[in-house]
Image 1 (cartoon, rainbow, N blue to C red):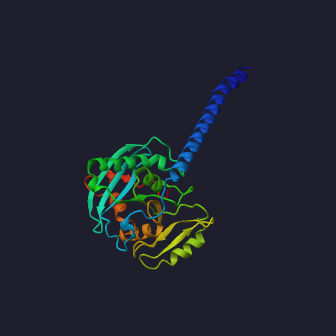
Image 2: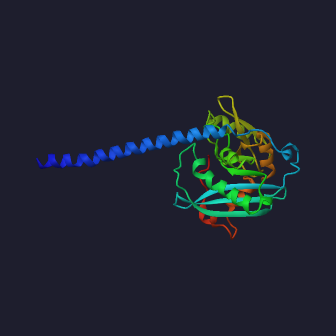
Length: 277
């Protein structure tokens, strides 16, 4: 009898736990639906072609400032992070502005919805510079993440581009496996054909949609980087500009953030955020 009473007593907490888990999952699904709906609306504002005069020039004449943004996490900490913005002169690629602020991330990481976790802080960094000194505002921003190379063709580079209305380029170090791009044997063969710096091939999904470019950005690197349109720039222009900004594998506006050896930055104690977004 006592055992039966004990079992009955345990059933209450177990049932409450299941109900709590169910409510949590319902809330998560509702959040995902809201985010997906917002992505659809924001995507309507995205522009995937050139809009600036300098983009049409072979040597990018008229382009004077290029920016880079990234969000890196403190080791063993998935909530506190460094939101960074760096602006470089072009074509010299010398740092003319830099900011790194510690932020607290409230939104969870969910694949395909990274922008809702990171973009607000990156947008704030751009807005602060715009208010502080508009003359230093970058004419194009390199984002450590994906643009159209994304589950719904609207990654963090697109999201940030639409929010700031600035040309944006997504640059990822790892290939996001979407729309059939996970065919590893085919990808490896194509990568082997990238013999020289500047060699590239298009990333075309099984749907027939061109989602980005794989680019050999420097001679010493055996791995390409993955370039995709974020906003207000064509894929060809984005790829050429990325190539022109690479001294090493990663374009300088992003590398200057991730290098993390300047006195202003706590990034030396941070690790890169999720590599493919």
